[in-house]
Image (cartoon, rainbow, N blue to C red):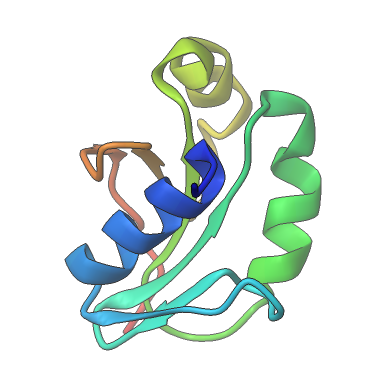
Length: 96
């Protein structure tokens, strides 16, 4: 049975029209961007490092319980925020 990280990554991969690769960073690479799935706000710095400075939409995916703290942490960043169900909470403003 897949854990919540894997389920979220697979759902996000569908939304971004891409693939989930648990062995690579970022977790999801797709035609509509890339995403890194994490479980806590404390992991945002690591997620940003894993997303790198590439072009195109970049999203950190966190559970709903972490959204308020994450929004405060990511206010001035171009990286977007998505929840585990694939809903965009803060859109990515990185250039395509």
